[in-house]
Length: 510
Image (spheres, rainbow, N blue to C red):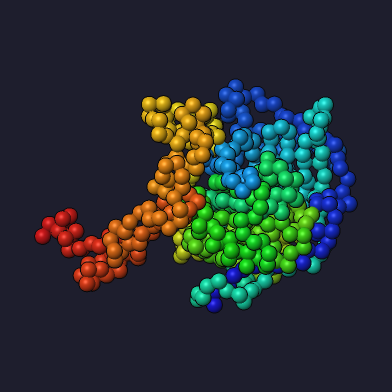
């Protein structure tokens, strides 16, 4: 029986007071940049940077390197009175750094370094948050220790309500008797589309820029944990339900996941992603997540729902997201008695959510991940997306969609008077809803059900229809390769019916 995995949270003390600094004093610190003597260009200089940051009046040297994990065409989708507006991100993508603390090889630092330092410094058993002090005359920052109180937390549960009947040999725990060598992993890139629900948008201050920065910080923290597997979580796009939720968010996590999957299949098929996540705010949820184990590269299951409990820290929530992504990559929870890692607590330990400090995957997780790559495969993660380093200034009229442009049909002559796009401003003309695409006609999106791609062959292909919300036709879906066609004399391949003998003769001759 296929089981939907859920993360169960009885969040007691963890959620009891203001996030992150229970019984912790605020410190006002002035980080000091360490100047280098290199004569290299400024571009190289900013790829690696070091700071001295005092913690409890003791100086710590932090060494950092730039990390890029925003897609080159990263878009933010917002809603205004029900109408969706797509915005090209104005975020400076060179701001994100990852590194460690000198003398503490097991430490991890994740910072946004534009307009001051903002992020988390993690030692083995302790974490500190740092952020710029507003209206400070000097380079002053607020630093405080993140603390989660001891509490009884169970972070996963089996659920008998299945979304699919499927045979699967999947144990809750993975254990091992011996410690295998770290597998020879190759770089993988997991493209992620994230949706933020209305309640979380409001909880984070109803400010799209603040929400965007928090999501990026969560992805950055998840990346710091997946570095061990050479996996880069690429944030391909972000959608914020700033006006109202597009699906009902009432019910348990597995019910939300089923609704989100149905919505995803209708509305996200044209946005590049390997997996889509819905982040939902809820005061005290019974479950904090739902996803499908080992289904990362299967489109109809490549989704997850993560619930953001009241007063949880971003560090703890990033652990929830990381555990859910790991489940999708075939990694099960550890048996704490048998699985070990280099840190005091491993990422897939059921108690990792309530622990501060650096976390790594155990050797059990490494073995599970290697098995997933070897047996299931991860072809959808092998393509490296273009990630932003420098954002060229958009040029309206060059025929390429850049920056904040909604459309770009080229020059006045190329656009012509009938164009739906204003060649001067690169926005849609008044009343226009689209400007190109097989589901766009007379500047309006065709209604749902209108055929936009006919069958290539009646026995091997299916027709695609417009969905009523996108100007583009959906992906070309064909029947399975190898199905018999034409009275079982030929077989289907890529949507057409092929005579294999004739194909062989055309290549190799009779």
